[in-house]
Image 1: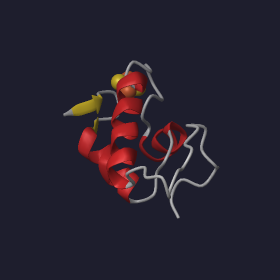
Image 2 (image 1 turned 90 degrees about the vertical axis):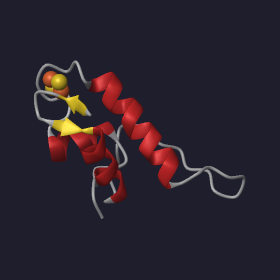
Image 3 (image 1 turned 30 degrees about the vertical axis):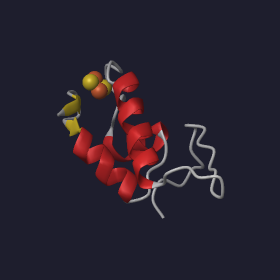
Image 4 (image 1 turned 180 degrees about the vertical axis):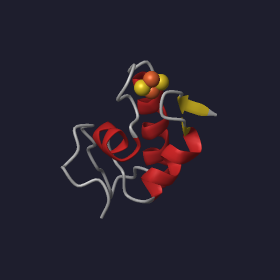
Length: 77
Ligand code: FES
């Protein structure tokens, strides 16, 4: 399903980006152009991003990671 119509980015594209190391909206914007034109996709893209991050690294008592959404400046390792 398309998430960002302006840049033709799908939910699968976002899931693949997360698997490749993307962890923030900044990364999706820099690498794929998500929310860089009309911006209407930002809310849904964030939901898809958060879901993909949760599926990739389930939170347990032993591993807690805080994702701020502002990124660290490095999108892909
Ligand atoms: S739908 Fe994503 S920038 Fe317009």
